[in-house]
Length: 214
Image (tube, rainbow, N blue to C red):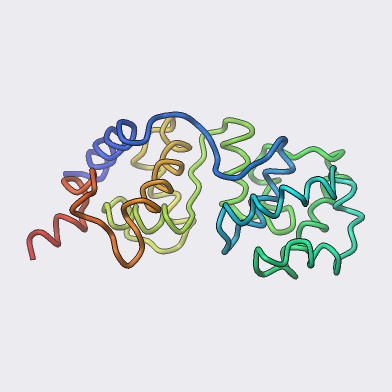
């Protein structure tokens, strides 16, 4: 089975198991809220981020208020998300750039997004996919791990994984794949203790097949 053939079967099964509704696990009302929430989500659960942003976005209701935020105070506000010093610095710096260069709006071009402080390809693709409906593959820990187990990539570098998946997944599946695999990674293909016997992908999963042969 080629990687494209395997990817086709994987997407067919995922669509049946998890549906094809587009959504994000982070709560937001506008582009900059999703952008900052995604920055906060690095090495942190979406549930924790949602708990923090619920009050955070009331205290800082717009990009300008973040740009003018006191660093020490913002650090305290986001402390529970971890890596709070760098995240606070990046969010303030990012807000300033959005105000000065984009009139407070979030750009849609990936090359412009990744130039923003604290924004890498993962964060940029979250924004592009969910805000601008641009076909984007978001490689988080679940996507990287599950994709390797399925045999869709052999790489560990997130950017290389992203390009590997772009080669084998149809564009209309790119955003969905991330949503579905996050759900699958949390529910079934759990790190260190994957429930292969319960997995709907076990017949097309390279890792599961290899375990059965051993």
